[in-house]
Structure formats: C-alpha cells, structure tokens
Image (cartoon, rainbow, N blue to C red; front, side, top):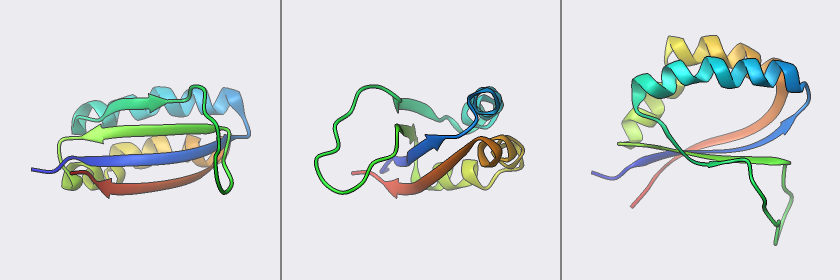
Amino acid sequence: MAKGYWIGHITVTDPAAYERYKAANAIPFDKYGGRFIVRGGRFECLAGKARERHVVIEFDSFEAALACYNSPEYRDAQKWQTASSDNDIIVVEGI
C-alpha cells in the first residue's frame, strides 16, 4: 500500500502560539501514525517562492493522512495553527 504524506510550507507569525500548535498536533499525529520526515531545517529555494519553514509528515496510507487532517483532534490543534502561521498544506500519495 502506498504511503500518504502531508507537505506543509509555513510562515510563522506568532512563535509562542506556534509552539502551542506543535504541542497540540502531537496527539493526532500519534493517533494516526504520523512521522516527521522533515521538520524545519536548512533549505534553498531553487525555483518559485518559498515560505520560511517546510514540513513533511509520513503516514502508512493516503487515507490515514486524510483521516488525521480531518480528525477532531487535529481540528483542536488547528486553531493554534491558524492563529500562529500562514500555511500551504497538501496531502499526497507516495509510491
């Protein structure tokens, strides 16, 4: 079965609130098997536009990745995300 991935590009606007988001998102990521592959770190934008932070989270399946995003647990965490950052997030199926 193909894995599922969240790919996020983030600009943090409120670092203290973003830390609360990171603490709160641990609950749904643990429940749905999310594993960080990339969480911040050094990068170089070679084409197009980039935000300041990049995240890749791996799940056992595309369905698990979507279920996590749509879960009540993630919705609770997401209020901190919305208050603390601008985001582009996609869910993609791997090979």
